[in-house]
Length: 326
Image 1 (cartoon, helix red, strand yellow):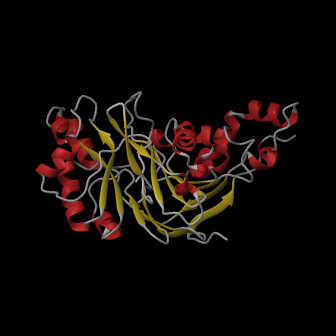
Image 2: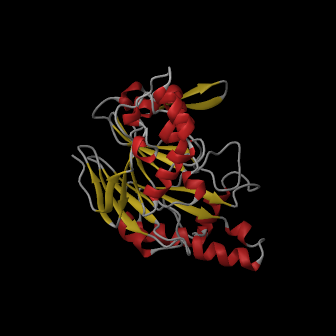
Image 3: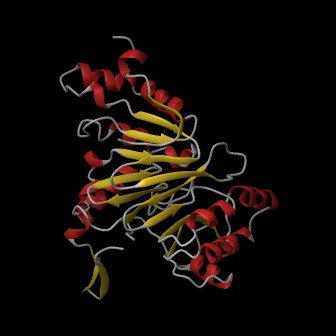
């Protein structure tokens, strides 16, 4: 049974009430002169190592090569999504079809954690709710900040006609699995099952209320996700010695080119490469994965990593892309 601390733990009103009536180990293959990662079938077997699958590395600026912010922690046959930006379901299915990760088949997307309710982190939420609906056994479980229940109920209202036709017409979809089970969270342990324990901790995302980072502890790995945040000592404390730290970042090269008001916004809402280097040097994760790279467009390959090195960080850094696996 799930255990955790929540400010409100409830299922959104069902439809009929709203409307009466380190992988072991990935090898490299030289294909056409290109080194290609081979993900063995063993990664999906029960008892295999915990995987971090990056589903979307994008930002609010549209980029056809980068879906909206989303990732999955995969432990054995279970997947746990963090955020649901645009394209999250299709990227998950791509990981299933192309990488052999059964836990990311759309019918297996059963649990999602939301760091905050900014649109770029939640525009894929209706997709996550409704696309796998017919194939998912049981309700989608969602853990998010205050306001998640209202957002969920409003999405159900927006798609009322669709839901009505699918459940009352010839398609015969089940009304029992369309309404997510929403848990509005506070800081502390918010989820625990046989595979992971998830701790939420508050972060400062400018004036945006109720923003969280998450710490996942599985039998073999500790993974910390910053969420969107300005530089924070909370990240240092949560990520100290972690196996993987996944942290948002913006480029100082781009920062130098933007007007003063944009600079003020970036400092209040996000973390620069210089600040991230300080955080990572204090926390010393085994692997640092920068994501949600603001100002990434137009930068040369590896620019974020070079900025981190210039700022004095010498640890392992991954230059994240959609569908990368760590």
